Amino acid sequence: MDAPTTTSSADDTSGEGGGWFTPRKPPKRQEDGEPQQSGAEGPEAAEGRRLASIRPLGRSGSAALATEPSEGRIPAAREASEPTDEVTHARVAPAEARPEAQSETRPAAQPETRSPDAVLVQRTMAEIGPDSDKVTSYFYALLFTRHPDLRALFPAAMDTQRDRLLKALLTAAEHIDNTDVLVSYLKNLGRGHRKYGTQPEHYPAVGEALIGSLSRYASSVWDEETEAAWVRTYTKISQVMIDAAAEDELRAPAWWFAEVVAHDLRTPDIAIVTVRPDQPYPFLAGQYTSLETPWWPRIWRHYSFASAPRSDGLLSFHVKAVPAGWVSNSLVHRARPGDVLRLGPPGGSMTVDHTTDSGLLCLGGGTGIAPIKALVEDVAEHGRRRPVEVFYGARTDHDLYDIDTMLRLQQTHPWLAVRPVVDQRAQLPDAVREYGPWNEYDAYLSGPPGMIRSGVDALREVGIPVGRIRHDSVEELVAAGS
Ligand SMILES: NC(=O)C1=CN([C@@H]2O[C@H](COP(=O)(O)OP(=O)(O)OC[C@H]3O[C@@H](n4cnc5c(N)ncnc54)[C@H](O)[C@@H]3O)[C@@H](O)[C@H]2O)C=CC1
Image (tube, rainbow, N blue to C red):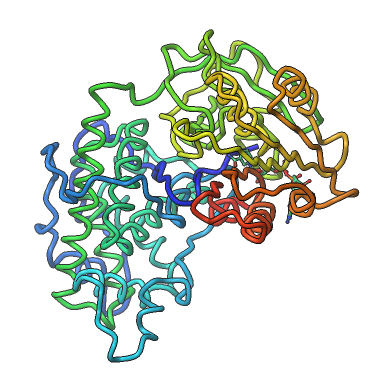
């Protein structure tokens, strides 16, 4: 099944964006192609005022956000940029979930801790909240009418990811003061865009469309000051992305080709797909990649690696075909040895900290067992006898499609305990409560959103601090309709 794209509780910012692709020739303004809008604020009025402010951002090497990342995470946006496998819709965080909404309810005497730009950006976000679908549509209308070459390079069916790019940008802007988290997120986002062929000159085009759509739908709060704040914010965002992509270019390809070498249908809708990349693919156990099939060009989905790095260089994924999941259905029902896929760079930070000897408490629900298996192999390879307890949840016995592998690992490694938990008999979080104590353990959760939520609650109840609980982004899992 599609792996979620966020990992870890206190970190991770893998980033994949929604896809800006290389035009065959440099993008060119198409004044005649403007979307026709009735009403006072047409695209020209909305967008034409300050386009010169967003300049092409070359590969300067000087990141606008200078602070080094501390592996932070932006929970809402990380996955936002890369869909899992489902149709999703524009989702701007509800007002009550937004940082500015919280600060708006502070007592008046409390000092403002946000930067002036953040205040203006967040005010815009609050304003466009109810119109997020319209903002998204207008954003892409502006982008593609002004830069038609870009349209041809997005997936044919934009519904699947059309809001990903915008959402990632808006979330990044909203967190502009949270530099540690943001820089790491944006660097990953910039690196992830290399597989689309994104070039520095594409960023101003996107920035213009962004400001054009925001100014239209946040017109009641939009003024010169707000526009300047957005221009500064977007310039910072894009500069970090451009620099990260340029840096990455020196050491890694934009994508890897990977030939399917094995296809093991474990249940009618779950397959283990093994591929051989065309060149070495470095990654860490617990991470994931983005994957494109030949049947759905430019539709990328995330899948966790189901093994630690192997000496033969092969990579495996556990894929569950989900309703309307184009990529997952192709991988389960169509892919065969010899087919060639493309892989993006690895991402995610749900990885083992080898500097400690703490035990690992792992909860894997359904195909979420894939990265858990990789973590177990990673611990085994490091030769440290750390206790590892795996709770493997499934709907029925039949759905424990990889239990044999897990039990074999348990036989080989005395420090490993694997406990299958089948729904009819127990709930995964309840099962965890029956064992323990867990206060000396780091926890890893991988599975559907409901499992992550109730699992985190249960783990906190049994005394594991939140900073030691790592998991995939629930928001993104929900967005994926998993
Ligand atoms: N890196 C990761 O974290 C990965 C996550 N996944 C995610 O895992 C999910 C797997 O889907 P399926 O195999 O269809 O799983 P599923 O829906 O069949 O659920 C599997 C098990 O998770 C537990 N579970 C599910 N909902 C729960 C809830 N509300 N409360 C407590 N426990 C619950 C139960 O034990 C259930 O049997 C997908 O959403 C996929 O995106 C998949 C691969 C990797």
